[in-house]
Length: 269
Image 1 (cartoon, helix red, strand yellow):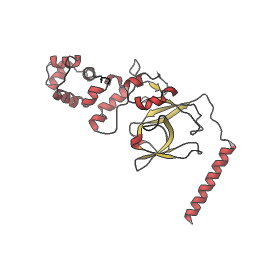
Image 2: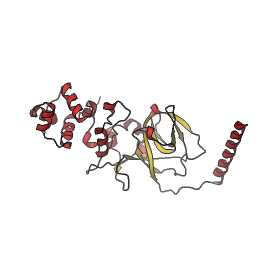
Image 3: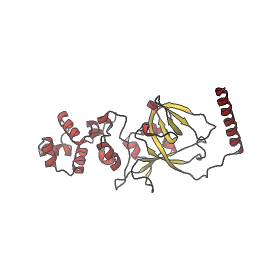
Image 4: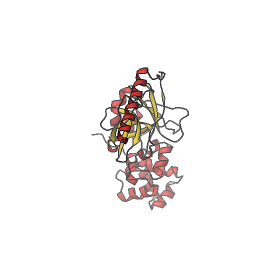
């Protein structure tokens, strides 16, 4: 069994310096001696007292779990600001969680790329900092300053006119209740070896209705509890030009429209 790495000492020093506090001033606020705080920050204290953990958690408004388990300096400024603003999953008891990301030397978030060969493993490693850090990563100009972005390859023709083999750049959705009807999203599902790229409508019964852009594919629903992550479409890149609808596709679309009109007229009679 792998040993859980503890980030508590470096997190305390990081949060203190972020507040521009000296060891002396923070120790006074917490009613610690300076030597006790120094020992906590250096890692010399291996078994922290529960009372000390709770005092530090309350002062910085960061949960004990996050202080112990999350490498806070690696979050990036946007995610860190969210956490310190009260969006700590362990502190609030909500479904919001800290996204595992990577940052460059300037503390700016990278765009991680999930290559085809890594798609099957992403479902198990999506929240593992080590797994995410091993993904290919790069920076991309003209992305919004606020937000976390990742790139996913898609396959198949269900989302035509977005071509098969395109790479979709998408933004992490922190709260799925904010998704507007008709938004294109990448869904990472518990029961899938892959992920799905669909147009989404949030249902009142706690389900998502997922629809393909290609009308040859039928919509289907998934339960919210079966969703690990949602990434909102931002743009795509492809070496293939989007195809124009074929005569057959256009004919099928017209037939489906006629059938729907007939059904509607029958209901109204």
